[in-house]
Image 1 (cartoon, one colour):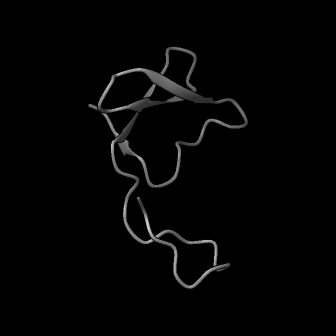
Image 2 (image 1 turned 180 degrees about the vertical axis):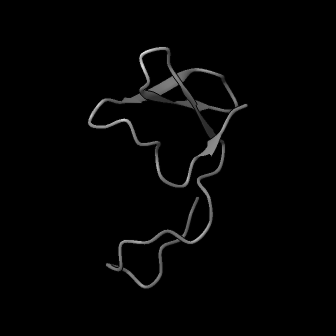
Image 3 (image 1 turned 90 degrees about the horizontal axis):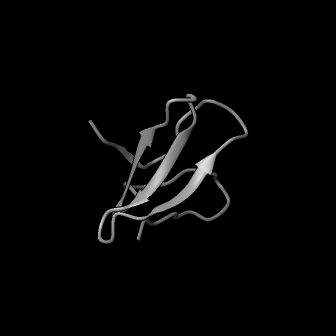
Length: 57
């Protein structure tokens, strides 16, 4: 898991592990669990990618 000291500064130290993200045909980003391959979450608020999650090629 990523660490966040000091608390409350709004930044993450390190990447989110066992997660990846890819772009859908509509332009939204979808987060995927690397161990099972299941889709977890779709970001519909804006077209920016999830923070700290690696991108698939």
